[in-house]
Image (cartoon, rainbow, N blue to C red; front, side, top):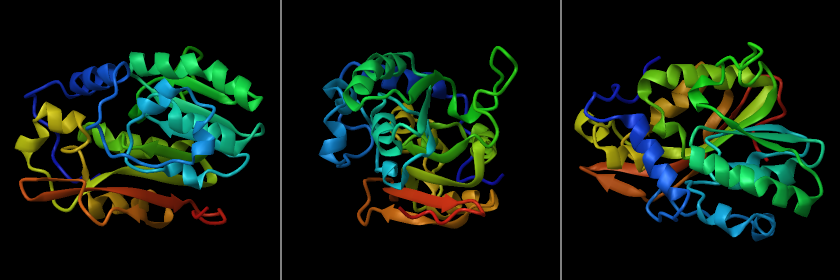
Length: 266
């Protein structure tokens, strides 16, 4: 599948750079990771302060959650978005957060009982895994996330952290796990031109949600090729979040739905 940039060279261990940066960010808030976003304070009220402060995103994909949804949160991090979703889907819905960072998983799992007690039900689970490997077999041989088991896939400033060599698998898995009529709401960073290799090879720029950004039109096309309809940017920041060597990086939220749904909008 065509992508917005070439695979990074072996100049640095990309996975390790992301793991180390986000592992540290689970213990101490890092202001420069992604962009600040406002959320409904009522939905944040039941979530522990440490979870809220250590959430790193660039949009609010939870706006596209519906009551009763089965939600998959890719790169769930501290768990803030998943805990917001748990309240929006209600007791009849379910939320799965996928993350591979040990420190972030400890933070989200440690807060789950407190949130469940506050809202009166427990409908969230946090799973250790890579978001591009949702088809990886678990102990009984079934995939980490089953086929057609999800109504909404969302993520918040995470897809840009996936190595371009794994993105075809990532996208195929997003399509695979969604039930007919399923939807996506993906907040991420995109750029207005292809990112050159020397910027991709910078560990700080990559782990900082910058140099792994999809080119803006390529990101839309990738989901259209998967068969999603009404694919568009529901949110797109007018001003760039960052500009590096003349390349503009901005926050967007991409939405789309599979045939058979009643539409991607809230």
